[in-house]
Image (cartoon, rainbow, N blue to C red; front, side, top):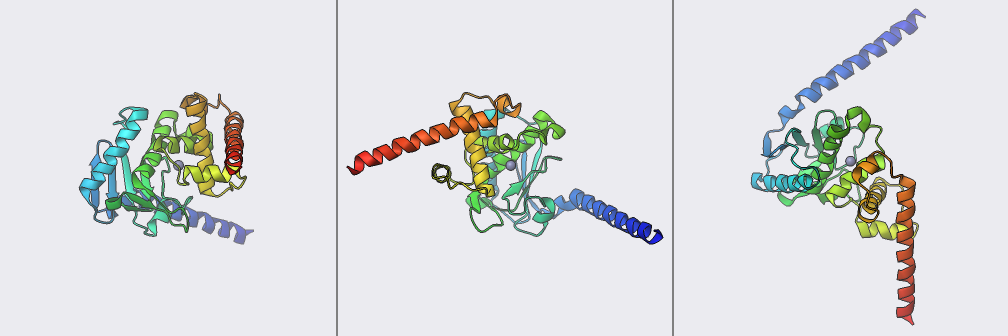
Length: 254
Ligand SMILES: [Zn+2]
């Protein structure tokens, strides 16, 4: 019994030490980022030198797109940290190691796995679908901060995930999987459950709900419009397009 208590105490102390070390790291890691650029409330930091003019152009373009949905949000100071593939990205974003970026919605810090500012590109640590437009990744991650400020951190975790992610991609204007490729997979019943395919479907549903069903983002966040209803409506459009497409190709082949 005594041995078990000692072992438990040692285990507890080790966990506590790890937590303290992690908090210390989280509070001090921004000091390793030597290069910065800002536009309004959005601040970009990298470990590598980059073209400042290009960075400001990207931040301004992201800011304009966000303002067209949210208006000015200068009260929210966003800090983006580009880890340049270093092992520290895993520490910052342990739940999504193969992602382009992450936003733990704690303090408006956004993490990027690897940004190439000069070419407006962002990379993810995975074999496929690993290169996207940097500005659009920033828009997606900044939307998560605005969602947190609009709904509160606790409520944020109970919001429907397909809306949280789908709406962030809707404002961004794309998903990391090309829209037509996703539609083709869906209409041939080949859409799988990989992260890129899941994000595509969430994006497609939010897009369909807002653009075709006249839904407001609030009706989606508050679940007054249910996912099943949106899914059902979206699939009927996809299927009717597929039948029209099949009939047309049949007519054309005759
Ligand atoms: Zn997201």
